[in-house]
Image (cartoon, rainbow, N blue to C red):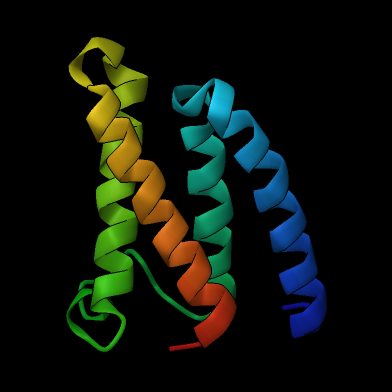
Length: 107
């Protein structure tokens, strides 16, 4: 892990860049949001694949991320199966996790 301030600056820069693209093509940006938020979760010590974490203190954060990830993966497999509302939900979930991780830090 880098110095926390450096991580935060990098994450904010990447998010800002992705947010510009969200306005034009949110479906195309979901995989990049997923990657960024996953990196943030891992850097903050969340083991997203660990079932115990899904039941611990960070369960809401992990649940929001996994719900967004499910939509992102479904979109990659069958774009017609994902509505604009689903995409908006995924974006909102990624945004909530991103904002939480910037403020809260490690679990």
